[in-house]
Structure formats: structure tokens, C-alpha cells
Length: 502
Image (cartoon, rainbow, N blue to C red; front, side, top):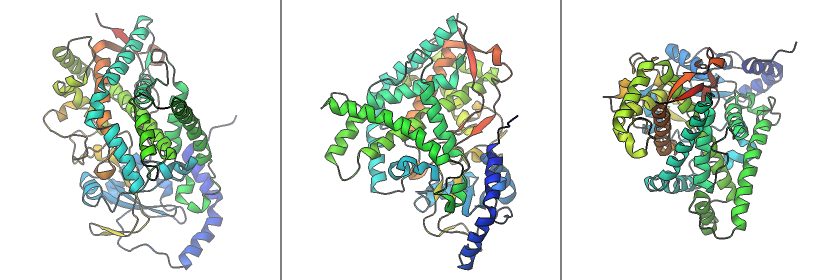
């Protein structure tokens, strides 16, 4: 019988294979006198060659949170050849993301993200530079500005109505709904209508599976521990094949984008008031600033981050609410009192639904979509408190650990939405104990859309149906095991049966 090799074991096997050859390289580097500062932050004892690589395991956010309990909220590790700074407290995160934001604003780009030259043109992975500023301006002015969001409010309402119609169809046949997949389809069509003025999947059928799998594979591959990231000398070999696989996944999506763009260009001047039209006009008017490759990478960022993170957060929220009947009851009572049972939540309703907002915040506290945010990089030596952080250091902000810090949060591992009712804490990057979207100049640009879309989907699902665990997967459906990648998703999909209200 052939047994599947666990990813962490695979990594250690490959490390061993290259152990002897890399020892020679390390000895050569040391001979040239390349040393780190003496006053690095504290951290665990390092092994020869691999440093602390063996301590990551298959749940690095948990492993590093545990290590921080011993070594402190500002901790240094050596992951292969890469010095890594791990931030695990709100105070330390504020120092990195606000007080010294510019010094820590560059990106440490995983090797796999260079597939299809994506990192060279991506707003998520570019360093702060003129191209990055131009792309952020397009996002902030034409997609996520208040005016743009208000203008597209009808689209979001329409997509939520389609989600509820799909669940109602499942209810009539007593079928289960895969919450993550349904939410993904809704988010996908919302983005595709905003960008291209068309659906990319049938809103009333369980389609879009292939696109979801491709995006899921991108997030999974990009988040895997990759030997090349720890031992850059192996870059040309790509021993685990992560970059090669990611190139295939990127290629599938970029081909779809190219076809849509070509179709639009063949139409000539379009009356469509969508993001694609804005981008094509911007390229025409500003050909020296960005080009079509930038736009393709921008769309790839939007579809990757905007679908996977939204659907995952909704799935975690539903799972947590189903595990806490009193939370479900309180949420339903609020919805019935404010908007009436069986109605779809509108964005104008959100300010009058504080407990629903608390559920979303509590979900993001316990299950931040990107557990380490996106990694940063120190481009020149910098002081952090009393420590010296050398040039080239990778910086990981463990938002997952910060959200569960028992010195900040009472009953930190418990799902208690009511904790936010009187706190005033928010997820917009000003309260550093709650930073699921990051903070500072590199805060997630999609935050304004996410904090509208997640609660109207969640509230509408709760207000239109009762929910029961699908009996075929009763013992698995509420398994809260995480699958680590760039995004933190449920290892086992949440499958529940909607029951139409009387």
C-alpha cells in the first residue's frame, strides 16, 4: 500500500537530501564573514543548517504562537537561511504597522508567487513604489471607495438574493448546502459583475466548483512551507514543484481574464460602467504608469483574496453560530425585531444590527482570513525597541495569535460575540488587538467591501432559514480543524440543511 507523505514530513525529507551540499554553502558564506547582529530578539535554539525550520509543523500559526509564550511577542527565528521576526502582540504589531510602518512596508515575496511573473505586477506583493501607488489609487477610487460601493449596492443585494434562492431550492428538496462553496459562488459573481459586468458561474446551480478549486489551490500552494523560501540557492530547482503547480493555476485564471479583456476590446468603446472599462481607459490615458499585465495581476489579486477570504469567513461564522444555539437565537431575535423574519438584510440595516456585527467581529478575531497577514521584509537594518533587525529579515505578524491573546481577551478561546457590544473595537486597523485585515499603508484594500458583504450574507442566511447538520456528515460538519495556507480555511466543509421558516 502506498501511503501519502505528510507535507511537513516531505519538507524534512528534502531538507535531509540537501543537507550535505548546503553545509558546504553555509560554510562558504560564514567564511566571508556574513554575521547577524548580536542583539536580535530572543528566540528558540537553532539547529545547524535548518535553524528553527523543524519547529513550524503543519500549523505554523499555532506553533509560533506557542513559541512566543516562551520567547516573547517579538521573537526571532532562523528558517533555513532566512532570519524571521515574529510579532505576536497588539503592542508589537502597532510598532511595526503604525509607528514604523514605512521601515517595515516592503514585501517578503514567497518564491512561488513569482510564477507567471505575478509578484512583479501584483498590488499585493509589489514594494511601495509608483506602480503600487497607481494600483492602490485605482482600487481606492474605483472599486472600494464609498461612492463606488454605494453605486454597486444593487449588485450585492442581487447576489445575496440569488444565494437565498439557491438555499431555498435546497430546502425544498431537503438537500444540504455547502456553505463555503455557496458563499464562494456569491462572492465570485459579485466580483465578476463589478469587474466584467457578467457572472462567471450560474448563480442558481452548484457550479463554479472548478474555479473555486483553482483559487483554493492557489491559496494552498502559496501558503505551503517551501524549501526554496528558506534556502534560496535551490530556486532554480524548485524541488517541491510548488512554483510549477502555481504557474498552472495562475495560467488557468489569467487565460479567462485575457479572453474577457479581448472580448471587450473587440466591442470597441463600451457603455459598461465597470472596473474593466475604468482600467482600460486608465491604461490608454497613462501608458507609462501601468499596462495590461498589471491589470491582469490586479484582477488575480481581487479574485483570489475577494472570494476565498469572504467565503471562508462566512463558513467559520456559520459554524461558530451553529455550535452556540444561544448566539443563533439572539441573532435571529435581533433580525426579526429590526427587519422582520424572512427578509433579506440590506446594507442600510447593518447599523441597526449590532449583535450581527459582533458575530462577524468575533469570527474575524478567532479566524482571521490570513493568519500571518502577508509577510513583510526589512530592506535595511532597523531598530525595533532595544533590538536590531538586520536587512533582509522576513516579518510575520501573527494576527491569529494576537486575536487569541489571553492578556487582551477574556476567555480568549471562547466564541463570545457579546464581548464587542460595549467595547467599540473595530477591524479597520486602528485597534491592534484585532487586525484581521492588517493596518497601516498596506492594510487590505478590500476591507470596505468585506465588512459590508459578510454581514449581509450571514444575516440573510440566519433570517431566512433554520439550519440543521446534514445527517450524512453529522460527526464531521462541525469539525473546526483548520487547513493552513495563505488563508486559513476549514479542513472539512460545513454542510448544513436549510429549513424554510413557517
